[in-house]
Image (cartoon, rainbow, N blue to C red; front, side, top):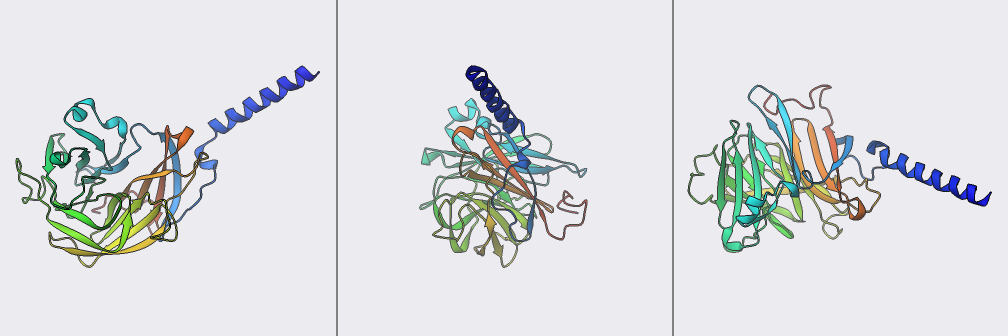
Length: 301
């Protein structure tokens, strides 16, 4: 009788574990939800390999779009042999996709790999200036397609602005991609993993700041508001806290990764920790006031 009871308990435990593993991710509790006017509307859990760095929505000329995800598995052996050891959060505009790479060797600088709408791939290297950090965490392309915003790491009070390759003649093929301007932030930020333009004068950024010394919540979603659209000149950015990146993992706090804003939809990626590190959570927000059915509208519409 004791042996049979033990078998029943073991079978029940195994069944419970199976139910938990197969249960839809949306049934788990999500800690941290809406962020300002962005309303959390959905989230999904997917394998981490090709998604644990970030994502971007790529629009084609016919108004169709597809979501590109990037992860450590996208760092090919060929790129590693060239000395590029990290891939970050991509950005996209007008059908162009920008992947960002960094090297452990400061002399190599930063690499921006641009894929054109016709599939043509070009590489653009920026060599570091005095005081510039080697990190190349993300790409955010301004709505007019002329400027590429990138970020460094740690605690910083600036974002970097480059001419957008292929779309801005200030980026000249075969030459070093120049630093065009700096956005000076009104408040320091820490460990920014991604930024994306929500309008010509607002970026939304995701951080993996695990502390609360800069803001009252960790792992922030931030807005950076500009006085005017970027024009290749020094600019000021007013920083505001929108909320915290949601947490849904049963293994502990997740690491915030990249972010994408497209039309009335915002997505942010968080990689699960520890035993759950093979998965990422993709959180989807809809901007309050977005008409029903238009949350995935072409940004130019």
